[in-house]
Length: 401
Ligand code: SF4
Image (cartoon, rainbow, N blue to C red):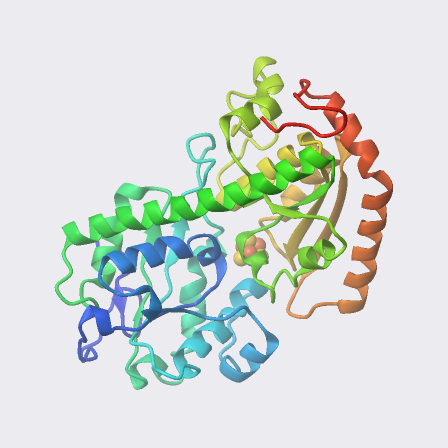
């Protein structure tokens, strides 16, 4: 079976009869819309294309989402989708297609079917939201409606279906989609490049976890509170998550994201050891106690993050970000809130994020969160510490395991 392949235009899997003239790989410019699950996989793509001879400087990601981007580059190309994280893709495609000083040769927008989640092996599956996976097909339609905009501008549109959660499938998926676009590409070369991609992604994730650990260590050493964000990867986009966590950080509360929470064995044993010993879970990354239907990677990570927020003493508050009408998030609202609040940890959610930032109301809510953090954090830290095995440390500060 041939996966959705290299596409210059038209339906998935079709190839242009007049493909653009091929340049050497080192001269190609590849545009990648910074949308959806690209937010947590961008390093895979940089490693992958770098290993195939396309310099990182020639892989161009679109900017964060803005209204201006949508108006300037995506106007009239909107898609029928209630999800803003998909709808805003028209602005990203348009920015890469029309808004570059030097034109791109390939617009590469992967349909990511599954993710290489850190919870893989501990959950049922690590699939993407179906709307996320199919998002590129949806967005592309707005650029083919009247005429093939990509063909007109000499851009090759490549949108492979890719199962990052099943690494053995990835080389063939990417080879079949890129063999016409990258001169001389072989399956063996693609396989080696996929390996580099995964290793690059792993290095980046480890670096992010290391930074999170430094934050947590500082909080433990100083008995200071921090805030954990429970959200989907694209809520890191300042135009989708509206930088709510940054507004909170401005009040002096360090921010951690569940996706990049440190996974060191000692820390995991300390946090989840009592639950494992009691037989509630099999491992620190097991979430079947709270979310048996663990098929969706980003949903799973949010549920796991809620368990972390409930246990780690210095996380005195979790904030939940959700986009307007998110069908994937709705069933999780109650469990996530209950997991966090039953531990005494503060919980606040922003459930209807859309294109515009409700600046005034966000400001008031952030002030409210900061007020509760100031008032309750010391008590929450003390109560949560008492619920876990004792740690080494002097009076006050603690040495993180
Ligand atoms: S907002 Fe929810 S339903 Fe829409 S694409 Fe994102 S995860 Fe899927």
